[in-house]
Image (cartoon, rainbow, N blue to C red):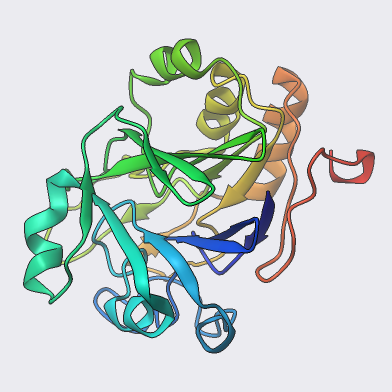
Length: 251
């Protein structure tokens, strides 16, 4: 299994010549315009066998990018919770129910519980291939199912979790000082509860005063909490490959 971090929450997974993308967005200047201004470019050279999204927010779901990368015989896979919305966008997705593994090519894909910070429909994805297992957490917030997920799956080679503890003031929801994504201490704790070898932080690096606030001193706090809980962290720049197993310089 070869892993490449894309921008924001995007991830490319490759196995046996097959390519799977999760939350892969090319144009963040749409919808709420949350995310990097100059994202890593992947659309022109990434023919995808499968595309997954965790939910429908514009920083995780880019219909035009999906149409551009998905092979004619490829699969757009979503949870059954959002199937109607995706169909209304002109797609014919494969829909999965929670906790039901699905085999597609070399990948085994399972949708598992997640909780969206503003109450929208969301899942996390467990991806298995080549004897490796990862979890992609979209922009989940803290919830009480992390203990059960750890018991069920027992081990992950890596987990890709949001770490920016975002506090938002956006038009469609009432303002709240409570973070809508995992904070640094929460992301570190989740990594430990999931028995993961390493946390690869995602969903960070964007701050817009008055609208979208990232957790203060996020990187420093993540490092402190990782040391306290003895959790390994690998920072990966957009476009770079994720190293597994984790070399010492990434700890």
